[in-house]
Length: 237
Image (cartoon, rainbow, N blue to C red; front, top):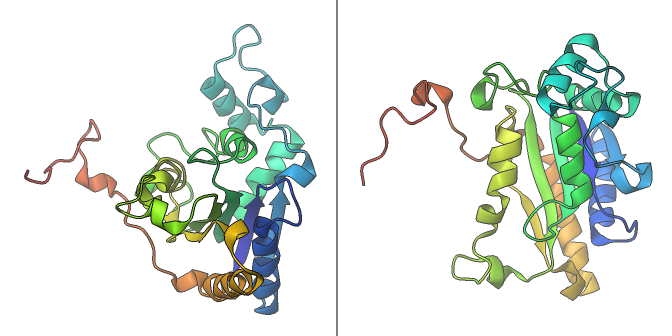
């Protein structure tokens, strides 16, 4: 199995760093191939604009999707982006490793998505969800939260963690065709003892070694939707 980890934490000694190291060690020891993009260490630029492209479809006015279509057709993305796109196509499984900030992705990781998941390379022309470009590949979010679990429970003030992750799972990963693995979440690692953190790392090692058969989230089937992408037979109220 070929695994691509996009790591988004600025501190190498963080628990996110420990999770990535644990995954790399476990997967490589099992004979899997692993590539890591450590976004902060790379100095990855998260701003998506003309700096993405070596050419211009319209040098007078920037229409992002038109430029992405042009660059996809002419292979004219800047080398830093082309390298990330190549990793994305190479992998069987993608892992986003990040701390949840403001109920979402850190800006550097969101910017990576903005710049790498482009029209013509990750989606476009009706290629989305179960007809997506990346259909057949798996993806997973591995993350930490600042709040303990009860706050992310059904009755917690933050609501279920699955609700917070829906824009990532559905709007990003499933949208481009990934089968999304249930997330791996460590709540408030800074509040855990050394023994508890070690137990979480052991739990993650076991989790990543089972990625190929790990439980997945249900995604939409495009055949169930009409030409307006509305359910043909909506559930009865």
